Length: 475
Image (cartoon, rainbow, N blue to C red):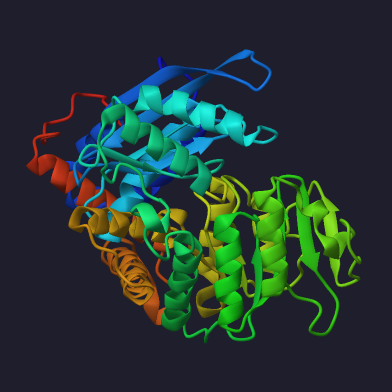
């Protein structure tokens, strides 16, 4: 639709979904779903508002706040809030669009949405962050609620920010309800929630390994990008399962473990220090192992301005856990050339479309020896899944044990994998006799799409009509 503003991130997410639907037999078997694609790609509601607050110097500051309430056919809108200077409607529409189908794959009653502001928490005092959160919630509280829209954290919004936002909502609305997830354990939060996205990612990859006959994590070399919550807990779970983690990164560069021996790997102690550095909003260059106030280790090298994929050498598993489009076509070819077995996104849309094409091309031609790609809407759905479990606990006024939540998370990730797998085998031509692995990106896209649009049809959000002459689908 040429009359719409250019929204590159959203257009990329739409085209990635639409192309996999087109390349499958879905539209041949169900031509009415072309109409559904046109409808589901338009948000139900987009809210934009100004956020006016005062910094510590007494100066008035203004930011743009957003909430994209994309689809509520399966339940209340559900998706995070991102505070980052790069936030705009294109990014939030892409994230909200992905969230619809990701939430569908969890099997829980959650719709899709996303929000945030172009506010940068870095360099701000605790008092300034509190003031901003209160001003932001003063506008957002008119549009959310436990049965309407339940935000959570995302980049720039951690436990501290969720606390300030929840407290502001409670005071403004005179109501204690599960309106946000990611809360503290003493006031309605869930065990395993901070770990959920990283743990769930690893559980999903375990299912991929089992199906493909590629053993377990024990002894596998794992490259991870990012150093935030998802990357930290994915790394810790990989280590727990016996893997060798060889990289982490931040927006300034990547940290790679190299050389021989036990020192050439990240340890839980390293991840603990990374968590402390991130909490203090400092870069990875502040780590002691690369000379940031401690003894520099010869087993690690920091490469400024780089991502890890072309610097880690041979790895068995790659887990992008930083941000969107963090694996390029060139980096994808490097991973394939180095014999990587599995790449699974811990971030949303972590691979460019060109990179996905490389992975999918290798999957089709190399058979049992190929790399196998898992899209973020499936492989990183563990975070929102445990958010859904937190919503359930809030509704029941109960708190489940760590073991109960972890068991439910494992089952959700297993079901998401099996759903994508079986759907791919149903709708995508796959030479299983020749060792070709099913397309998880196609299977996950189709499974999530079908579940959502069938619910929309039952509720009257769209209906089958004969297409007009020359009419095409698109955004």
